[in-house]
Image (tube, rainbow, N blue to C red; front, side, top):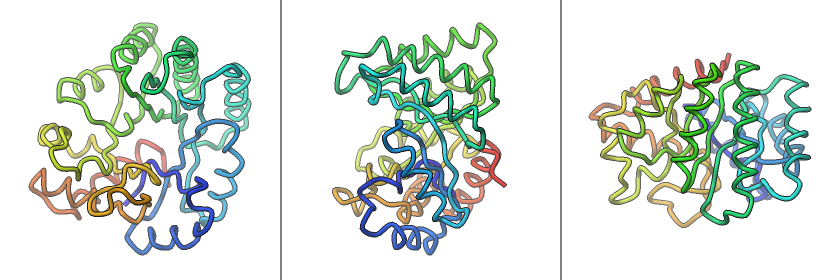
Length: 257
């Protein structure tokens, strides 16, 4: 399995990073993707990835909730890192109005610019969107009309089948399915019945969004199999089939060797 969205470099794992990584490997996770957030965590993310023995790939990007007064400097940091090369994706980028609207206009500018950079570099994006889907679609539709090439994953997808189809109409997109799918009455469960398995990638978003039966505790990549098993149950197939399909999709999308 591939965990396409893990913050295993987060401070939550400072005390047991090697052990958490070993548990993930023992659980069948062969690779992890570390999404960027901002300059404050970038170095730790890179250093932790280097300790995985090639089991982690790193993305670079400015997270919407990190867009603030110094957003232009943060965007410059992303641009400089992109010039260095070697990244597996641009992300985690997007829009988030859940906590505050104060810098929402700046979020849209940062998101648009990073999408353009991704198209120029032929890199996939990792898109985070919360309480701002309409604006995300407006931006993506505008970029598509301008001929910007777009591919990537909508992280923590929880939308309707209509939203999924709209996403696919805009580019070569997949949806990231994580621990929420294991929650009782999770709406994404019914949507998944109509989403082709080849359009799904697995993710934990550890240390957040912990799947059942560990909900309420710190999440970690070793729980990825619980998500695969739940997807298998919803789609009437086996966890092995989910593993094979999602791993192939992740390898192709993120150009993993």
